[in-house]
Length: 253
Ligand SMILES: Nc1ncnc2c1ncn2[C@@H]1O[C@H](COP(=O)(O)OP(=O)(O)OP(=O)(O)O)[C@@H](O)[C@H]1O
Image 1 (spheres, rainbow, N blue to C red):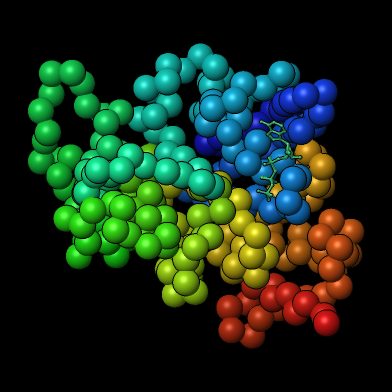
Image 2 (cartoon, protein in one colour; image 1 turned 60 degrees about the vertical axis):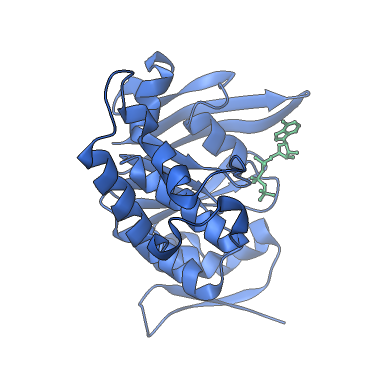
């Protein structure tokens, strides 16, 4: 077990947004979080990273209650890329990525060779090395997104949490990002809207509807015609792809 949600409840303005959510993320695997707009995905991810506190239930990190961790200890192992992540204006790309090393440094330690290596590797893996000296503000939306991923990787996390990270990316970089995340030897939890991408890359899926988990399992178990109709209100035909042996959804016109 890596991250475990145990009967989480979170409310705002008299509305129960997260309503008794439980699941476990397996170490080293990629867990996809699916659900229609407003089903609670972002709220759940913010509970998992302690940006919000649950009204009931617990988040466990390796058998220890997340509320018992100091913020810095969480940052040393959990990286979060938020949906509308922004970054300060006057920074170069590599400075943004360097911020990922912050939780690992003490007040007295200088910038180390290990820090440098982590930053360079993260830039390389996300295809941003050529732009490392460019101004953050000069980047396209997709390049900013990839720089956020580089910052998260530079953090050397054990758990990587991503909220719709493929927004703004062209198809090459969407596939590239998902391939990269699925190949990493770390636990990832990723909110996605593209169901075919989730089917192709995630090891397991959980589906949310109105703040509850309504389905969980491997993509073949979860992505059925009935679920697509009931949860996403679409008619579709699901077959096993002859190309990658995962489910492939054909949406019907
Ligand atoms: N701070 C808040 N104040 C008021 N309502 C909120 C707040 N945060 C979340 N909600 C409500 O909770 C519900 C779930 O929102 P959330 O952003 O978690 O959904 P989501 O599944 O991530 O949606 P999307 O796919 O559109 O990003 C929505 O109805 C939203 O309006």
